[in-house]
Image 1 (cartoon, rainbow, N blue to C red):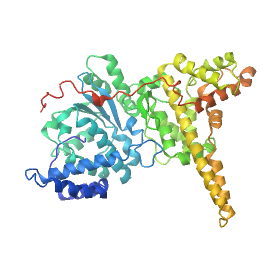
Image 2: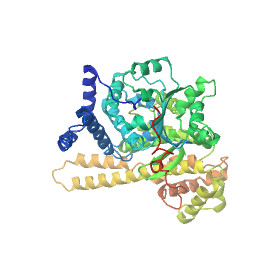
Image 3: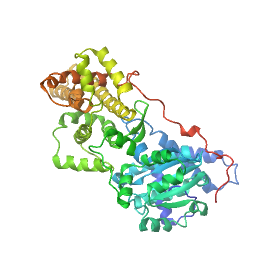
Image 4: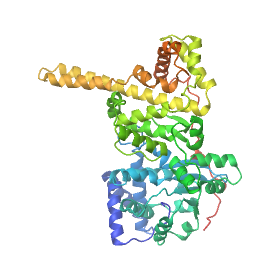
Length: 511
């Protein structure tokens, strides 16, 4: 819905558009605009309105680039948007880039103007790297989204006015998945905005299978790979439409989750690329890391959450729906543990506890523990399960490091307060109290809580109970050395930007 050519607007629409544009374009950019327009005064043949739209577009893109970071960076784009809002699906059989757009994941922020503006910047920045350079296929998943909502229609109107013509020129097909009567009516109400070239590329689809067959007409494997990239919530709606079993999250074998709707995800904190991660894991972990200070303080309360709120959140996670905003971090910690403990097999496999007993690795034998962990990740786990295990342990390592850094900063602050004669004693006590809270999460404590998620005995025999400290020590070592290159099994994410579409340079427009 963001890809048509520009058309005139009414006065009221223009006012709403300018309100949105004013929020999206920073003051410094308005200064740049005067400089840009001054530099182009000699080009009298160019339409001034086109100059303005180009400036607005570039300003949004440049502003968006300032928000690229990782979970703990204040103001950065949520990393999970790559996995749920706008999904890069690689190339079609014909060599065209495939992009999956699921605006239904904007619903939790529908009434937050600032967050919607941020999402708008993210979408345009991501699409700029694709639509301006390659032929592409755009898949729009309805998922009950109502574009007549004023907060959305304003931004849609702005997008129509500032998007370069290359968006429509390079568009090969525009699929609309699961349209209902209101969807068609809303799109038809935009008829005057949309160019004939765009209308010729619109194709309604009643099933994911129909789209997969259209994008990859001759490869069952490629069709299955594209199907996997549709979020679970979209797959549930598709299954409901066709009377099939609805996909769920809890209690499902990990490989089935990964191959069913796993997401290829780049963790910007570490720079590592993880293929086929279960989306629920990404959403919970990234939400915790994004509000790390609160999450670290809430870790001690993960077994003291409200029952009704907890089971409501589990239902949302089980269905793959977008997580509500402002969740209690303790609820997220608890849900993450429940999700992991509900897996039919622990992350390091059901046999890992036996390996540990056979080798008699005592607590503290770090080198031997690392050798065993390298053997498990490289030789004894499926690729899908290994990636999930590495992502979870990397997340725990990151949170422990943030706790350590926070403790060091607070300890330094408390020491500074103590050296000031005018400081009242209660300030010192408050700093020390915060310090203690920040230190709640350590590799040892994280291992105590999450060891059953990584390895556990098949039966709690007396011998197994006696060896539980061995398991905790192994998981503690795993968390401490999570970034060890010897453990890593992966490589680099595919760079589709370096791949040009077949015939993209000499292909004529389809209109």
